[in-house]
Image 1: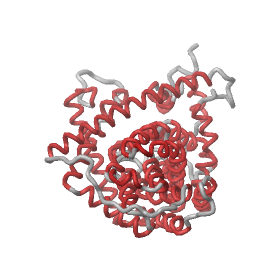
Image 2: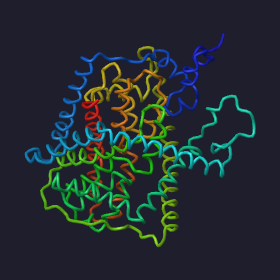
Image 3: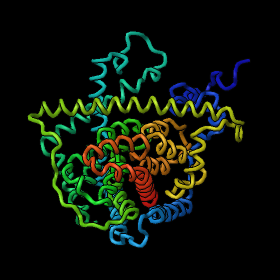
Image 4: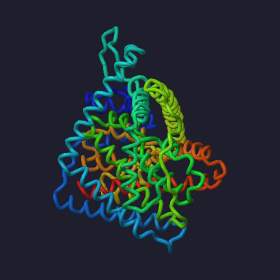
Length: 467
């Protein structure tokens, strides 16, 4: 008789869940994953209106609780930034309500998703031309399992190269600067922050956590401790435009109009990050004024595309390297944990441990307790590893394991760079711009991860309040 954990099953859902591709990304071996899979329900979760009302109140409570946690971790609890906290928290709710509820914006996000599909098709044409069937082109042989031909590094990740080149081109044409200045103006007027801080935070919505401060590089060495921390927090709480479209592609079959939601998550994370940062490290100095400074001027459109492609290649290779190392480390830890006795009929894994630890956190966002273990695992994966792996794991969950409402909350909560791997990149970038303040920047690193995570949790709670 064959092994019950590895024998084929007539249910294709279970066969897919046991595939090496799926279990490797999650960091579980097929034998470790199988007992968990067998217990998973694939029935759609339905909630009564009274339950929805309670979960909305739960999200409201969590929204305030995350601000309270930031205050408990504050360097100066007596200097609570009342105006910034109230204006920032109200701004998050108003922004989310307008962007989620107004038909004009929902229709715009529908077109954004079509744009994502066009970019994916264009990228696939390039990868198929260079890599052939490995890059998504037509196979020279008959395939019995087409889904097994998907190769992440050659078919999905190259999208980063295209987006990076397009971003550089938009910057050369001056369009990106105008968008950033518009957001900066709104933040400066509503939250009364300095020009340099407002520009840096606004840029974080669209570009990476190292590229954003490059736009205000001359001001970084003279910014206050609170301003630098706010900039670092926003870098942790948002994602770069170069990966925004990539994540939308991953979740395309999970969340409707996902590109719009990921963009909204990054937008409302900006005021959220200012709130958590200013509560944890209140401002004691004068705001630093500033204007956008191009880090490296392109001489032509083609030069901008070339430079953007090279920058994208660095990011592309970095993503691949980080995924390989992090998945390998998690798999190694899970093998060690697998030597311990099984708990509740399943092997102990890093994912299960962080699922337990993060369950109360996601519950505060408005996730029902019955789904908190699964959602907490995703949040733990995002915090310890990165948001990319967390999004991949969420896209591969069996239908019905998370309700549509919880999936949407987690889409927002996972949308940030707050993890130890990103911290190393951030410290390297900031130290290069302000070497004389390297010790201070390093000391703010772990706090920035916590502050950025709290900001992401607040965005998740805001969505929970409005859905």
